[in-house]
Image (tube, one colour):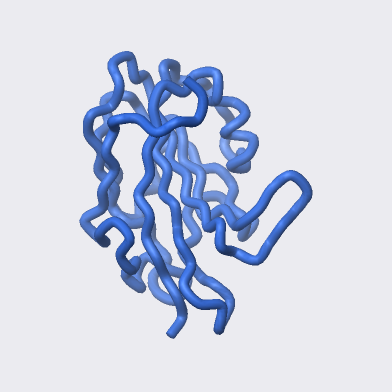
Length: 158
């Protein structure tokens, strides 16, 4: 299938699509991941992965761009969401250099950034080690990708 949007829907009780991410889910607040919920996963979904990426971040590294805030995987195909601040499943490493979620924290005066929460539906449940980067995760799961969609939130320091 490749990386194309599917009919799957991703929502959050914390913010509306395109809306401002509440401070408790940012580096300026409690820095806990927001609740996420999904529906209409493709038939044959065996597992999920979640990524949060900020393409507006002024960082470009060889072969990458933006800033990765979260990579979470090993989520069973029966799951329909994540609780706020979840510590379940397998945590990848973010661009803060830590495993787990690291909330929005754009540079002062940098304006509004867009945070893409991606949900990936996979036709397998690969046994992946903790601590993968987003790019390593995408490389490992691409052959198993059967659906994906995203929820975009915004945040700025005002």
